[in-house]
Image 1 (cartoon, rainbow, N blue to C red):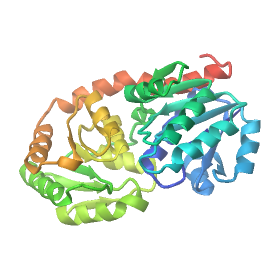
Image 2 (cartoon, rainbow, N blue to C red; image 1 turned 90 degrees about the vertical axis):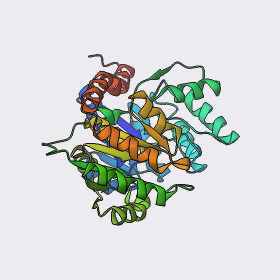
Image 3 (spheres, helix red, strand yellow; image 1 turned 45 degrees about the horizontal axis):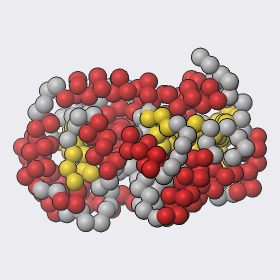
Image 4 (cartoon, rainbow, N blue to C red; image 1 turned 180 degrees about the vertical axis):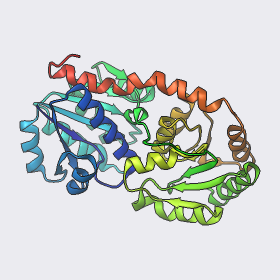
Length: 342
């Protein structure tokens, strides 16, 4: 049996690579005999890191051949159908849905939106009509698909990476981890100053974790210098997970910094540049602040309060444990599509 998987893979974004790591684990559990193939921007890197076969995602001839021989196609996870970062994204993934239209296709725990352009909305609706099953990672994505007129049932699950587990012992948790990304309108001086004050008041060690070197390294380096912090730029999802797991609290902008923290049982403060960040934090009962109107005293008090909350990690672990069956649910649906029931 052959499974083809596509998403934002091979670009060095360790959040998306963490999603792929979890998907492959769950699909292997649900379909032990399946051979996984991944569409990637860097097939060699994907094969080395994930131990799968890969084809270049822009080689449409190779993609067509793969889809023709696949028993199942998985679209996702991650945020594929959105036009906040690029208007091309929904068009590209819509094309892949068209190419896979003759195969059983499952939309795998995707986050959908924002879709600001009419063309993006039209393409997304059409792409979803090609899917045999649709799963999304949050209620907002399901609501958006209903607004677009998608009539097929949409099942809300959660991010597959929420079921990952760090290897080894995290060590003493006296670290404040921070993960940032560039974004217009962020008051970096305010953020730097607030984090310095939070560090002073908690007497924490500081680790800045860069999840996407290509885009985040400069702002991460500047923050590490401002805080006198260790800068960690991991190369694999497991390295990123270990880096986060050693923290007592994480402050993060990137959604998957928060997801990895939750998976490791580390309470976090979300720096929300997008509704997906605030939605994820609120869903776990954890605090967040908006980056476009961040107030220094608010951020300081939020971090210090969470640092001193001895019950926060235990409560978070209970919530994550309860969500893990949802993280594995898309793989079970994928198995059902090809007639495998466990």
